[in-house]
Length: 497
Ligand code: CLF
Ligand code: SF4
Image (cartoon, rainbow, N blue to C red; front, top):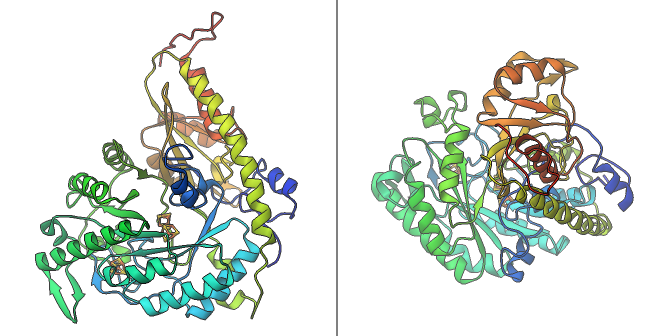
């Protein structure tokens, strides 16, 4: 467990040099991406709080990992997208169940992960029920971890119903980041999402239940903001139920002082046994989600890189190393060794400097293009902010929108990897093509001729021309080549496209 791990999650040697070298190599771990913000986009004291939090900062999730411990199984309400046999679907994918831990087991696991995964910066409790309702276990876990690893950021996710009575203790524990799942501000909309809640020792149903929930969520949100806790609001986009309404939700959250809004697609499948899954309620298509996010993003800070991770997830967002740290694999006891995490942070400071230079160059290159339509570009990346993954190994593609104004992150599109034991699987390729809806080009480290042809038939170009480049630089390079002719005068002219 003591072995250090390189920047992109691959096991590797412990020196900084070796960690940096790992950035350019290829492998099979999952990737990373970007979201809004960054130093300069917010006050320095806020940036200090979010710069290493993979969910709260634009670039932090390229470098930093979170882990969840599933210590809070009890829940005080029912959501139509949740099957209570599994974990809280407000923060994790439905249909996935995690290993439940006692607080002392959770603390032991956090120390083991911190010793083995130097990227670790955040401990989150996201269920598997509700962290505020199952408060005794949540609090005991946070206290034990705070004592063992004082500099680990503590993070909590809740449905908000029991939040107001926990706010004082949350602030006292030094929990700076709280997520509330808010899917509605109109109780009539809520009645189509929540059949019941349990509050003040009794069960409430229908519109009345959603009215209480809404009031408690807003009260908890305002109380946290008053105490300078950064609040992220998660909203599940449910087509035909709350999709249009989420514009009002977004405006209300901004007005109430939420730091970040994260709109996640409903994942609905009859096999998950949820009400929505069994009644045929569909989730949004990627371009429907993008259209809503684009409207919500006008004037608000929006998270677009959520991976709807498990309640026992470990690693960089998009990868799941939880199975390496199940209870049976943990050492009986281990002291925390801070050396690996400290050394890794020095590597990240240098990497961020190089990334900033690369971004400025990309922006300058794009500014020289006079007028061209925007394009969606997908990237296969296994982390570190580079185009460094084979098409067939990707379990997600990072989608960016590029225009002369710059490169902006759109979201991660999850896929089944195409390459299985050295062979391509036709069904997985069809799934990838569907997930790449709206995308003009996919930039990869490598791709075989057969998938390249299939993608071309679907109108998607696949290119290895920017392999191992920084993502923004590669995208800018592709866009400049696609839309401009070489300029001898310093001015670029538009190509057909
Ligand atoms: Fe975990 Fe959530 Fe904290 Fe992040 S996850 S409790 S804020 S540390 Fe992040 Fe995962 Fe999305 Fe959640 S990607 S599901 S937003
Ligand atoms: Fe399920 Fe979470 Fe909703 Fe409770 S709050 S019903 S655990 S999704």
